[in-house]
Length: 320
Image 1 (cartoon, rainbow, N blue to C red):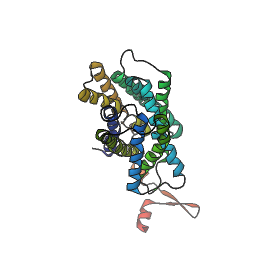
Image 2 (spheres, one colour; image 1 turned 90 degrees about the horizontal axis):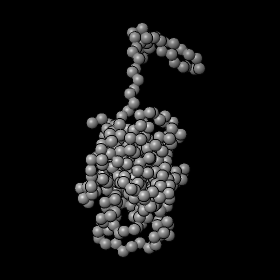
Image 3 (spheres, rainbow, N blue to C red; image 1 turned 135 degrees about the vertical axis):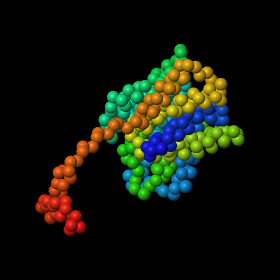
Image 4 (cartoon, rainbow, N blue to C red; image 1 turned 45 degrees about the vertical axis):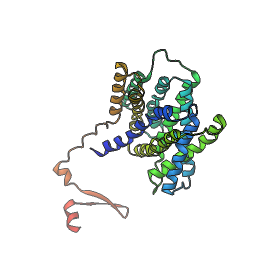
């Protein structure tokens, strides 16, 4: 396996893990507490990573971590849950699937990544495939829900692009940076959750097990792999792994909840998965020009004391 393939495979584990969120939420957690669930996903995971790494932001990274935490977690979670409550699940997933198109535009603006025709077509194909998987006939549309869904997708897309743009400070690992963002995002959600939903509900052992999974595997580990992957992949390649999340959710729903999975859904999965794979292909590198023998024996020009000095290769070797 090539190095890039290994990075893609590890990064893909993040959206695959996020695809299990719906199942865990409906089967293990108390109902109608989306903001509290978002808080329990982000803040404990962030504090755990801070305790493990024992590193705090320095200088400009205080505000950069706050911005990234708000974009990737603090704003993204509440807007996503608002869209999920106002829209049928399939419509919300389709609205969220436009994220790769947002990333393509933002990456061109802030990263200088020129969008290619293949990237645009791949992003459209991914959204179309997801729509076949999750969209049901007669689905209702709610303006507030659609706006919230688009803003949540835009927030996450901006988070991807600025995570890529800013990188991380020297000497700080991806685990510490993940902890900073999760903590900042959790602190953004904290007052909103208490103002909107009130005091935390009484929790059972099943609830605690569900929250433990969401905080550790679904958030701490997954976001570490996600942010690590963003560093190593282009922004468009990373975001085109996103369709793996609704595909995973559909498979879990079929296998564990007995939900229908017909030919149209399978076709949509194949299209979305194919778009995901296509999004990981690197552009073909231009063929290096061949160097002829006379060119190889040409003089090397170097700068010394502000004057240009030419030295023959053989002379240079003798003097070395």
